[in-house]
Amino acid sequence: MIHIKSAEEIELIRESSLIVSKCHAEIAKIIRPGLATIELDKLAETFIRDNGGEPAFKGYRGFPATLCISVNEQVVHGFPSDREIKDGDVLSIDCGVKKNGFFGDSAFTFAIGEASQEVLDLLKSTFDSLFKGIDEAVAGKRIGDIAFAVQMHTEIERGYGVVRELVGHGVGRNLHEDPEVPNYGKRGKGIMLKEGMVLAIEPMINMGTHRVKQLRDGWTIVTVDNKPSAHFEHTVAVGKIQADILSNHNLIFESIKNNINIKNFQ
Ligand code: MG
Ligand code: MG
Image 1: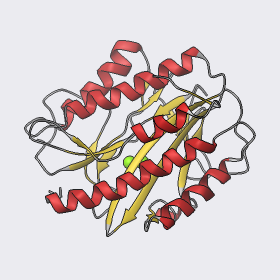
Image 2: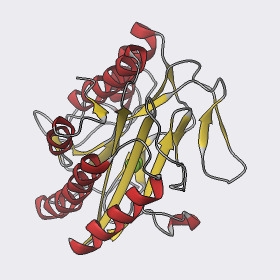
Image 3: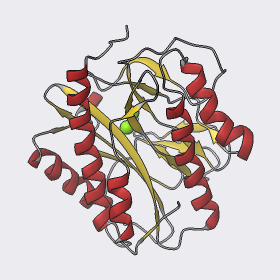
Image 4: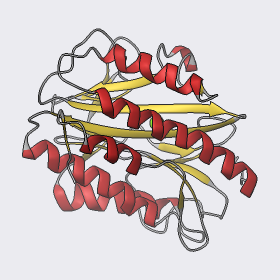
């Protein structure tokens, strides 16, 4: 069942989504080689609670942390740990916040230090494909229009692998609601979009094959060819003329400008 949100509810989802984005911006200030990823998680939990929110992922189906931190061949759902960030790493950070009963969900991928041009190209294409998808999040279009736009930009035009097993989703009083929002599909297919639907659109794009597997920890998803993967996500409200993007990556880019350890892919 798809819940249509009122204007007031959308503002509450925006508030939660902006805490997620500000949290990402705080993280982007301190990322550097040598830092353990668990340190980013501690910062995130403190920041979210200081802003009146709750970490949405912590305890969700037993997930142990505030952030999903997925490094290099890890696609999504990686655990923060004592693992130290290395020069050249690709770090996907997914974060969710619950406040006032509503969730926000957003992800960003960072290229650390001297990341290769190949990696920067993957990040840029994945990032751009998110906005190709968001361009389709308009009343009267269909889920398949979003899916096709992402797949066209990444897989069909550039030969990257679009992860099939994991998809975007509705967001609201629950972290994951209907409908599913795949990153591959056919134009004009799937449910029709209506004003007030709130969606997390989140392309997960692999440099090599689209095929993935789950590690024995029951969570971490990795590429089967060990090539890197990128993940960008916005929470958006479907609009009459255009989508309203409720999370905000610009805050993250501001921090990246001032951190020489992160390479801007834009
Ligand atoms: Mg997410
Ligand atoms: Mg999500």
